[in-house]
Every structure is written in structure tokens, then in C-alpha cells.
Length: 405
Image (cartoon, rainbow, N blue to C red; front, side):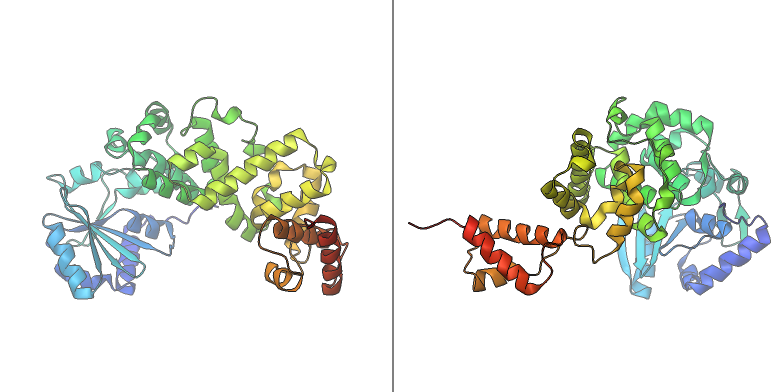
């Protein structure tokens, strides 16, 4: 569903001023010199009627951004960070509000706006005149839901802006101007010059957006992250053929981001781009079981193999569900949703401490094997009670524990 666009200048200004007062931002206006203006995502989101948990406020001042930022931070008792001392860019953080203050880089406001990433982020609100200034037709592009840049070289000044296009596809449900797409294809390798952590941050934004699927498909089509043959790997699925409606909304929000990450990056890329150990480990497991099931049909798995699959994928099985046959997905999802299903949620009636204390088992491989055996017996409903578990444990120890001569 498209955003509700406000195009009337008077209404936009009214909503801006209301929001500024609501967030107590009017307090900082007294610290700003004549010629200061508001720009960027804060204005864009108000025009779109879009609310976000974190408030990003970008203010441009003619001079002395660092000194102004320090004064504001001191007077409101907030955190102060210098982001770029050479260019004079600072950040003041107060709870959920991130206030970035920067020096004007051009001799005119229009020149300054022309150096920004996209037209939709180049609409200014002039504090002195209480008016909007939109020389790059950002309002029109918001109305058309299109991402366009005034100068393509603006993206090369900070190549992360290449990736940010796809974030706006995901978050705003916008399209990218065809000329900009062509430019991205020719210059995508410039992303290699961007700090890995910044790329990681943008990817997280992309995969968590409400329109992430379209953005991911476009990223794959342009093949922005890898060699031309990257997506020839069978692990990378045809996303157009997947019925994502099989997942509940909360499952989509929780498990599709991992699935999408695994669909645009291989493990080596995840490591290079500083993804978390947990994300890398989960992706390895998704790949492991996909290729295992390429060699062996699900119906041919023995009890241990099926148990290990559910044990290793238990916490994020919906991220894997699209790798199993369509005919099985409904049943698998319903069983996984049932927290009492002992195969899909392996558990144990006895823990290691109990076994060590009461059955005289030492810490080590034998204890691990016994715990797995008991968990499997419970998963396949061959034991149901605490007493049965103790009996089975004693039997297993008798048969498997090393004997002393």
C-alpha cells in the first residue's frame, strides 16, 4: 500500500511545526543562527505520513556546527558526537532523537541541496522564513514514489548511497529511476570502498523493511554483492515463486530477514561484511540442511537425521521452510507452532546435572550421547514420564557406558 502523500505546503509546514513542538525541538531553535534550515528524512517522513521509532533530524547551519552542537548538548544534557570534524558534522542524541547538525557546504542553499543523495531528501524547511524550499522537485518525486538523484556523482561522493536506494525501495515502497538503475549497475563495485559496518547497517534496514521482497529481488537482479555466477548456486531460490503468505505476520517479521540475508549473500560475504556470529552460524545451518536434502529426500531421512534437523533449526525453522516441498510446509509450520511437539522442539525430562549426580555419569561425550538419546526417545514418543526417562537412561548406560575390567 502506498504512503499517504501531503502536497499542500501550508499543511506540511503546519505538521512540521506541530512535530517540532511535540518533540520539544523548538527549544534548540534559539541556538541556531540565521540561515539555518531543516532537511532530509524528517521532512520526507512527515510528508509521507510516516512514523518511526527513532527520529532522525538533519539541520544545516551556515557556520560553526561543532560549537552549536556542543551548546545544544550541554543545555539539554545529552550525548554529543563529532561525526566529521573536517566537514563540521556533529550529532546530538537525546533518547530516541538523533539530531545531526552540519555546516552548509555550498555558497547557496540550492547548491547545498543539489549535493544531497536524492531529491526526496532535498526538501528544506527554512526556519527564518517558515517556508519550504524544493528546487529539485522532491515533492513531485515523493508523489510519484520514485527515487531520483540530481547529480549521479553525488552517489560516488559516498558510495553507500548506492545501497541506500534499495533501502528506500524496502522501507517506502518506492521505485528507482531507470537512469539511476543503469548508473548503479556500472558503479556497484564502488561499494567495496565503503566501511563494512555501514554496508551491514543498510542491509539490515533493507531486509527488515515492509517491502523487503521487492528490494531483495532487485538486488539479486542487479547482482550487487557478488560475481556473475553467485546466484547459480541452488541455495539461492527464485523468490517470485515463493508463497510467503504461508507465514503469519509475526513470523515474517522475525524470520524473513535472515532468509533474505541468506538469499543475497554467501557465507564468505557475511564474514567479510562483519555480520554477527549468530547470523553466520544460522546461514551455515540453512545451507547445510538444504544441500543435505538435495542428496537425500526428506522421506528417506532416518530418525537421527530428522531429529538433528529439527534440533539445529528449531529456533528459526520458518527461515528454512521454503527449502522443503510445498506439500509439507503447512504441516511442518503447524507442528513447529505447537511448542509441545517434542520433535520440532526437542527437549529432555532429565538434565545433565541430574544424570551426573544420580546415575554417576561424568561430564563428557558419554553424557552428551545419553542426553541426545533421551531427547530422541521423547521426540518419537517412546517415553513420556520422568520415571520412564530414568529407566531408559539406566538401560542405555548399561549397554553403552565403558566397562571396567
